Length: 79
Image (cartoon, rainbow, N blue to C red; front, side, top):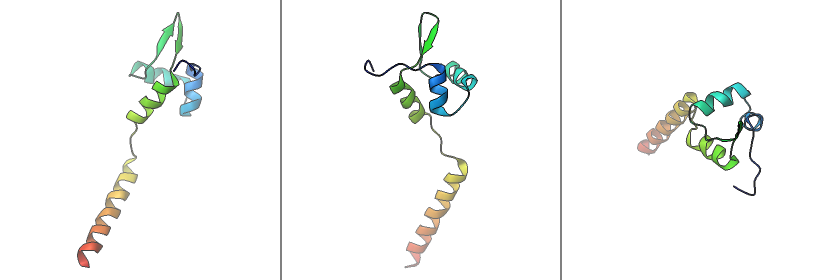
């Protein structure tokens, strides 16, 4: 957005908690960005949307959730 400052690669790396190299790899694979001359900049709103749209739930968390749901269904069917 216009009122919010644009982010640099370093800013995005701090936000994600990763290296600048990883941000550059993400940029090459779809992280929204644009150039101001030779400078790469990121819109914070688009970065947050990208993170939300590309998030994945850890497999162990998914298995745990599925296991808990199965237990609840089994307990409900026994009542």
